[in-house]
Image: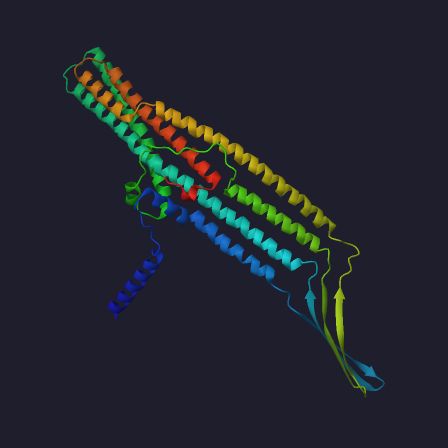
Length: 410
């Protein structure tokens, strides 16, 4: 019996696991990691769930009011006879002024705003994922430069320790190497902390093993895209939200105007009276209509007009802001590319570094030059990486502003 229960439990767990990972991302490149993050990031999933919820608002707006039934039963006496009067009124609310149609428009506009929020989540996820992937690859090179310095410093310190007695200058050199070693160890710890944070973000965003992510980090760009100076169409989440806000406020204004029209209720009425001889039944029609005497909904209409004006102004200002932002990002992008072209390539630095160590071993250069060279190699590597990341950040922000990020390659 226990074995049967165990087998059943194993089967259920396996089926559940297969269900959870049925849409496992197939990763063959850094582009696949980006696509996986855009679809799997928790914030994106929450935004898409909100969209599904708000799409149901249209069904709510389409609903018609239910008919109403009202009944009165009155009893009394006529002469010496007992009289019972029964009245039944059935009525259906009829909405005037296009209220239902405007509610549907309002619901569609609200879903449109949530759709823009989904796009915003995907844009932010794409940008952060691209930056994280590039930065992880950069950290590798920076840690390698730090490790190179640590190895040199440790080797030199051990060399000093192996001597029975040190000259004053050698004692100072040994102390300086120890301080430099501590400095480089701190730098390595900082890089490792940054690396851990980026790895955690990518694992959370993609639900992929860290080994898979590390395997497909993007290489350094050899050829950078040439971007147009201006664009006629900006298509991004912030503009989409501003447009949806406009649509919502316009629908609210129409709904406020339609509310000026009173609803009325109409339906059949029936009465029946017992205890009196003769014809004691009657039927007819009942109508209930609110009289717009004290209020024409002017306050709501005025508020809706001002809100619509606000949304229109916000959209115009958002377009202007995004155009200026794009121009600034393009300038940053081109400036970063110029800097990348001027920075000493890593390969040449490594060759010079090897020559320097050979000179030091031969006693041709001082220890201070060895330390300074390692420090400069690390700082140049950092500067090169910083400019590359600046260019990548500007490039992908422009892609997002232009609405072309989904089809862009890392």
